[in-house]
Figure 1: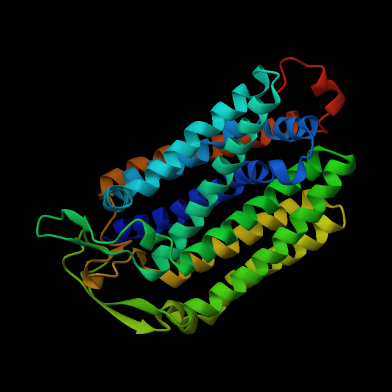
Figure 2: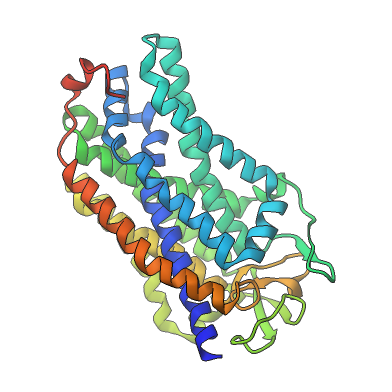
Length: 377
């Protein structure tokens, strides 16, 4: 019994690690895409930006696959409910992820200004849209998603597509995009020099300060919302379903865990510190250190969201008693044991080869070589 309870908590933490990897690594690439026509003023400058992340962008997609795979295997009820109810959003995300590599690989194949401009806009949209959706998803989880189950756990989504882009979700989406742009600007400042790096420093530091304002506004906002409180359920160490619990909603409930454990305030403070120091360091031309501050900023943002929701993962706004939590939406003990074993091998391996790839391909991107290299992006 204690083992199953520990595995549930472990996979909640591991899911957070995978979502963090997605936000940092994939978000960095998406941020470069979102900045492509903001920082890059000429074709050569945009090619330089693409080649700055060219050796890494496809490898970074493994975090996207790991995040989806972990939800599918460890939290199947979350996967089934979210993917069926939020189908249109998932299709938007899928199409953006399909169009992005096409723009990446084929942009430089034709020496046509119209062709390359079209590819640039595709790359920009397919970089900004996934990060907006990523943040909007977090904003919707904080408010609850309108779904419910029938007696055999068949889920029904009762909301609309447009309702997912409510004011708080939009704020969270713009916050996510701002942090992605900050990380992308750091990458450009690290890998390039001259006027391109200078523009990246200015835009990136501005994105960090915008993120600070949005994070602060969001924090005040959620303090006025009705949170979710689990008042009765089966023992968390036992297998259970969302049909065997009682959930109430109270104004300020999203801050209940902070009130119970004041030490948890360290997490959002870490987020603010990461954004502030990151913006100042980038402006001071220390992009490598600023990039790591961006990691801390993401830890603070995602960690603060997780703490506000705990133990909920996908609360229901239409039927709170059927909300999905860590305890009732997770796989069996046997499944979690197998997944833990595989993760103990492959997650460190992914971290190792990602670090190795960045180390081997370190250094500045030479725009003059790119200009005369037919194989460059």
